[in-house]
Length: 190
Image 1 (cartoon, rainbow, N blue to C red):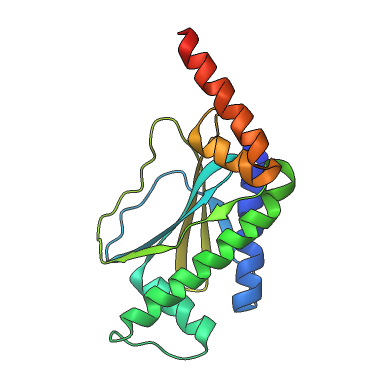
Image 2 (cartoon, helix red, strand yellow):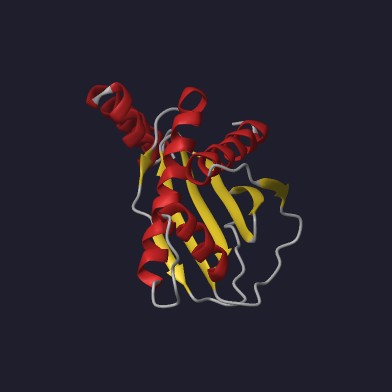
């Protein structure tokens, strides 16, 4: 999969989500150097699995997520509203994931989504990727809010269990069984 297509899909996802939720277009930029937050952060992640394995991750200072979720809900959230911030962050991430799923469907195929995970309170957090994955990263600003979005991805090997699962969901059990048979025959030859 071309990195440019993924970058464009991520950019379009961020812009359309922000315009829909906040009625404003964010300022986007590449993340050249990750700045360590001076305050606690919110980190949220969701998996997309299909012909590619992806993790969509958002990272934002807690004050920025409080601002964005307050704006989304149309009410001020104070320090006691941590659960609302966690829930709102998960909803924003779900919208991002559904948008990415829709935008990449024609070029990559369908994705299954995992449940979002949201973690709060990790000052000095660094986002890293595993060796065999690619990364696309964009930073967004909306008013006083800063927001980083990362998409980590790797293409499926057709002989992996996930690749067979994706094949089964798209082409049926017979195609998956034929692929498993090929996989075992290849293993026996070794």
